[in-house]
Length: 129
Image 1 (cartoon, rainbow, N blue to C red):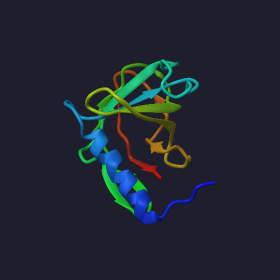
Image 2 (image 1 turned 45 degrees about the horizontal axis):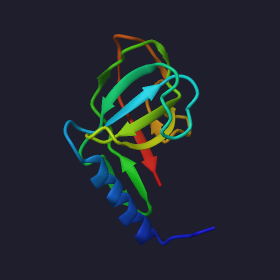
Image 3 (image 1 turned 135 degrees about the vertical axis):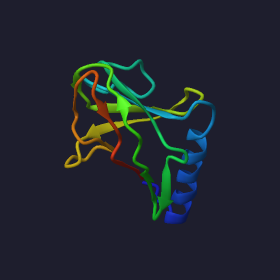
Image 4 (image 1 turned 90 degrees about the horizontal axis):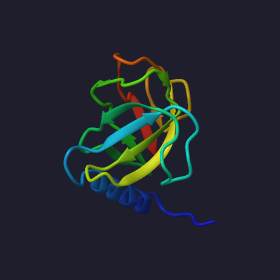
């Protein structure tokens, strides 16, 4: 197993911030219902909401990237948010991750994972390590 220093990990995460800032419009987190597919595979489940992320997406410190809370985004469909795909402004995939409520362990946390079309949600917190 490879272990890296916190300083190297901070630099790696700074590269993530730069990657997400590429292109126009802003990077987005697309939240889906259902089972997360293999990385890079076509999304499964229903696209529930597309949330533009802040630029920069967050702060890097002590080996992790703390994602900045977002503005609210319109929910497109009813469903239970289970996973997210984050893309930069050019549409390139950055990562897939779990979504949870604030009590959960998802890398992206929203107030409730039960979403209803016509309502609004936002990313409350998130961490990438």
